[in-house]
Length: 141
Image (cartoon, rainbow, N blue to C red; front, top):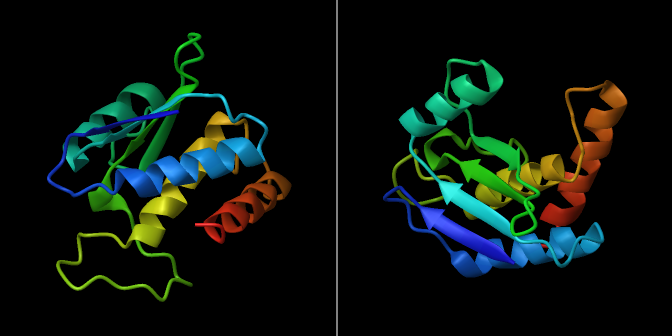
């Protein structure tokens, strides 16, 4: 269902991410798919963003379709780049660079939705549709 590779010092709640993947994939009728999730640092995600999207800057999440029969896709998250959701009331006691679980969940859901074909950059209608899906699944976490 989900493979998690943590290449950062950030502590990962594997149960949380496994649960999110199951809920979103099942909700989108893709319950048997397997995902890879990697957590990387700012420098690594910047390299990936430049190589695959032509953007020479770090970002919070990238999604890569694999579709090789074994993996549905890979999602790469940079915890350092995850910003708090404006509507979030959850706060961490600690350095500002440690994102709240809900914010990590939000970017993970965002990444899964990209793999499922949602694209907020196509149009305002698509952006609204994707945001609605994100909110729906985030409320199930």
